[in-house]
Amino acid sequence: MADITLDADKVEELKAVCVKFNHDGGELINVLHAAQIIFGYLPAEVQVIVAEGLNVSIAHVYGVVTFYSFFTMTPKGEHPISICMGTACYVRGAEKVLDEFNKLLGTKTGETTPDGKFSVSSLRCVGACGLAPVVTVGEKVYGRVAAADVKGILAEYGA
Ligand code: FES
Image (cartoon, rainbow, N blue to C red; front, side, top):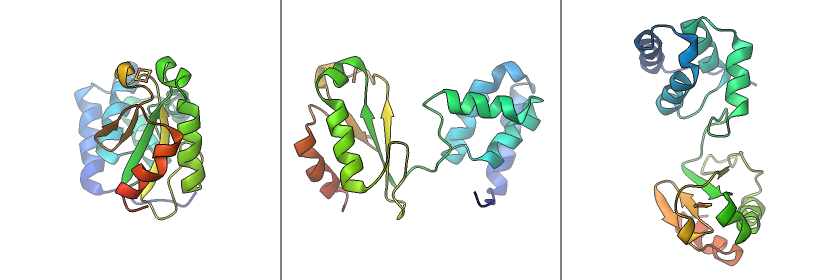
C-alpha cells in the first residue's frame, strides 16, 4: 500500500483526542471511533498515531480495527452504500440485494469503486427491521429493497 499523507490539522485533532482520554489504552475503541469520524477511515498511518498516543502496540490496534466490522481501513466512496445483514433483513433477502450492488458496481463487500464514487459495506441491524431489507446510501434510508430495485437506486446517484 502506498504511503499517504495525513492532513496535519486532523492529526493534531486525533492527538488531542488521545490526550482527552489520558493516553489510556483501555479507551482504544473510543479513540478509534473518534479517529474514524475525523479521517473517515483508519489507514495504517492513523493506526500508528493511535498506538503511539495510547501507548499500545500497533499489532493490538490493528487487531481491534480488523475485528470490528464498523471500523474500516479503506476510504469510503462519495456515496457509501450499506446493506443491513441483521436477521430480519437477511431472511427477507438482503444477501441478494448485497450481491446485486456488488455485481453492478464490480466491487466486493468492503470495497470502493476505482472512481471513488461508491463503497459497499454490510452492517448489523440498523434498528429499522419493519422496513427489512434495509439499505442506506449516505444518510438516506431505503426500505423493503429487492435486488430488482438496486439498479434504480444506483441511477439516483449517477451510476
Ligand atoms: S435486521 Fe435490518 S434493520 Fe434490523
